Length: 257
Image (cartoon, rainbow, N blue to C red; front, side, top):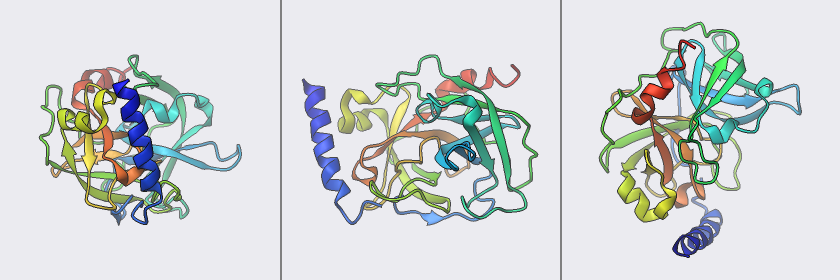
């Protein structure tokens, strides 16, 4: 019953947030070419109804991408593509690489209800050609790296909507947010916050939104410590992220398979 009350309260507040003029990645700035060379877009087959943005992803090595299970589960593997070295979804550059996906590996613990273990690895059909400063793998936290402390500054990157009723952004954006540890995140969302999750919050009109899932969450040293998992009403509530250090062994175990 307590969880039901929490859900109803969040939905009511979300409805209020959707009407706010401040519901916009929400905040943030346009990125420049090469700012986040580990970031990719995950999109659906352009030959079936036109190209459709799904979420973000993170380059692990030359043929593996990390994203969220919620983004790709239910899609036919053959309909998935990734784009690297592109900050615009409409303007092509000389260095952009588009790759088809030939395997999706969803974390075995993924729960579509709670969104626990919200991770998936995409194996692409042809290896990326790394280009210094434009396409390169993420720096991952090592196994055993402690959870960031509340107040740690982090940057989230994506093409997500600029508000609940907004549109997917044509140009990649980055927004500076602060971390809330799992305990404080749970004070907002209760038992919906799963192990290995935390929150990102920003000032008014700053946050992550639909379409930002799977995107890079980076610390000041350039380490991709998390990816965006889920959110309610964009900037009206903190966004929830999946920390990567606890999954280091699972992620890297697939690189040579």
